[in-house]
Length: 162
Image (cartoon, rainbow, N blue to C red; front, side, top):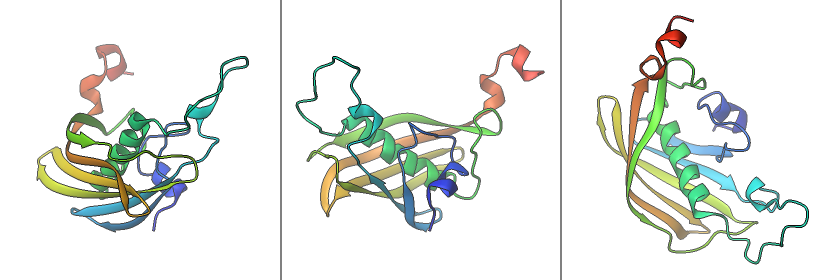
């Protein structure tokens, strides 16, 4: 339904922080399914010369949470994409609640994010989601609050007139 190029045209994230590979299903204003393939070549696995090798190749939970958040932003901005953080509206993750990591993720896993829009209150969305690998939950989020704000409100006076 939407490949990496389409995602990049929808949200401002770019390599190495674009953590969604494909959107496979969407019901605008309700739900979205997106996938992220975990590979051994992810930037988080790179080690500087002379650094000790990783003992555990578990995908970092913070990046898994960021990947789910990016899927949530795609759903929240489906009808009004904004791939440029220097104009329009900025997507701000306000809070997470009820975050659980019931299983680990490793290279070779295909993570599927299932996102649900629970509430939309003006410029604020309340979203829940589950990430799974082969049907096994690896991340559960009861509530993710996403706020949309005009970029101009974050600019200094000098930049507002530029």
